[in-house]
Length: 221
Length: 390
Image (cartoon, rainbow over all chains, first blue to last red; front, side, top):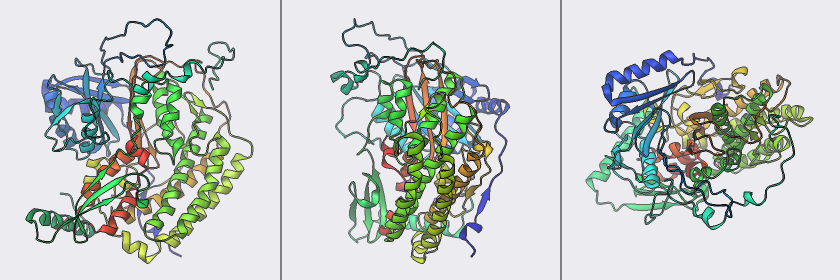
């Protein structure tokens, strides 16, 4: 019997994986499109590429990347670089409270603001992806990616409700998850995780004594 | 616009006709249909609001969020090894596959790699969770169109795979078996022989489903030419996995990136289909289940000897940095963007789940279709609610 499986196409060839030369070429292409609005780049050898652009060039970057072949939209979200003023919620409640660390330190490709939008797009033909970052200015909004990547719609709605970042040009920034009258922005670091505030993490009290093993022995199961 | 085949053109015309009707405000009174959140065809609590004109949808909007659990926030108050418990519950039908990209991201930041034996076992368990996940999809597909038998077959044969996963990890649905640096345990005795038997059964299951369901005339007429997504739209929405490959895009993260996993040791085919309709999406998943059984068969004979755990410190602190790792999960591209500040736990984890993007296309694809097709299109896009809401 002829199965339907025999009729369609398939491919089992492995294409060449991207090298750093390809990633440097992407940076050069972006630089010619954006000029000095491309602020910083970070290349992790044989792994990945980060670029940071000026906030007003955020949508322009999407257009430039799409023309370069980055047609596949992966995700868009926001980073809040403020260290959590509540710690990790695992601290011993009876211990002396320590002074919270308020130093804001950005990650790869630098930055200057507390909030950064970041997104990732992939070039399916060349098998390479790039993470783009931009500082969020004081107006707390950046241009929307929706004209260039349709998939940005829900991601921007999520970023808006979770971090309070506006996206200029997005037609409908309704809440995606939260009820409409919800106050506050849950994924911001200064939004307390109330369940941890009410009841401390049980892991503090229920700790079994660790078996005595020399440091560096491995076997950390 | 790129070249479209005939079916895709028809779908465009239907969508434009729906647009036109919305714009001229015909006298026929429209109707708003609410599907869900508690509807058996929605696999959980996804709600669809559809504006109808007669039997045709002019506008549809999914409402997510009935199951949002805030995992991204919760990861920030946990240590790295504790996070796997949470992410097990994102796509609960393929739990082990959820753990892998997160663990790989943490390992990438720590600059360690699991020993080869652990890589092989990880890959095998990954593919087993794909089989468990997708075989349920294949059975469930029939139910959406009124065929009851396939779902019983699927539950019967998925049980074998779940038993295997339970035998190796101790958990049927939430294995929580992956550790930074390797795996919790080695495989139990007799597991390999049993796995080979089960893979034979699963291939037989695929043949049965292909004859019973895919060869069925009703199934074909309900899915062929319905819910067409052209390749450029699919890429722009970030569709991934079988949904993207069904639109003719040859993209599989198992093959197209280099990860410390054993996929490059196996010979398998990445299936694509040019049509981009519901049929193509279902058919690609059937082929993927077959390929997954072949991958398991090839790898299981060649598992290298050695430890399953690399040397890692007892208290895991992940150095400062950022890492993005994604893998080809049963539902599509699942990835974690992990930011570490050198503490016991992550500073921020962005979870990119496949269903979130896959379902965000529904307002586009449901425009212009008929009411019964809403159910088949949603089924063919295949989402798990926990994977949308996280």
